[in-house]
Length: 347
Ligand code: SF4
Image (cartoon, rainbow, N blue to C red):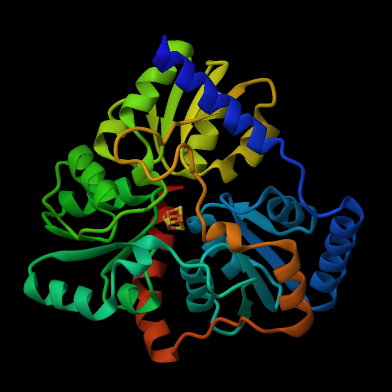
């Protein structure tokens, strides 16, 4: 019973947080929203936002003809959109990816401070040395890396296409060097049976999900489907009904018959889930338990740095532009384009 009470408390805390009013007065918020809409038009700019950003940013992207998506679709959308300026609300590697794929466009971000533990944990020089030690392996890197790390790769993948790419490479007899997320790499290796050598990196958000917490929640919600992002530890993945990228999680929540859904990924995704399945009960997977640094954080601190105020500032003043060395960008473009072409062929 104690475990059930803890699980119920976690759910209550989470729902309370989702319904917390914005600290900004509504009139001020509306003024900022309207200003952003006008500036996007004036500047011939389009807003490209990740599912993990604040719901207000996601709503603005949708209302202004921009895009809310995972990093694969963000990259594709930015490249193919006719706007001359891209405003990327997400973390820095997403801005860099947009710039690499659209070098002729101006790419700005609400903040350049928004990074990612996977990117930080994979310095380009150390990664190059690791690759040099294993010249017989095909280098596959996750999109959550710097332009310099991408430039060293044979393939870039996102979580939505990682399995397909590694499965294909394995069928060609290739051995893989994978970086930086060890949990996703481990999942891909288990699912494909490929020979995968892992870099030791992790996402600070997904690594916090706890198998025991999900088991406790399942006692309260035995009919709930468990949807897990593969950046989570193997013990959490093992409990999943569906393992997938943000887009795949959203699709599963929509398509599965379960009326209750436990979600192990950043809680920013609840904005889109609430739109698509308002009649379903959405429950964030707990991050409590031994070794936890928070009770149910599930909230990327870097994604949370994107806000209305810094979005207005960047549109008004034009700072926070993403620059990628053209030579480096050209090198990184190859594995990125390989991924996009592969994804297009699969579609
Ligand atoms: S949620 Fe994890 S992988 Fe995504 S940006 Fe934040 S730290 Fe990086």
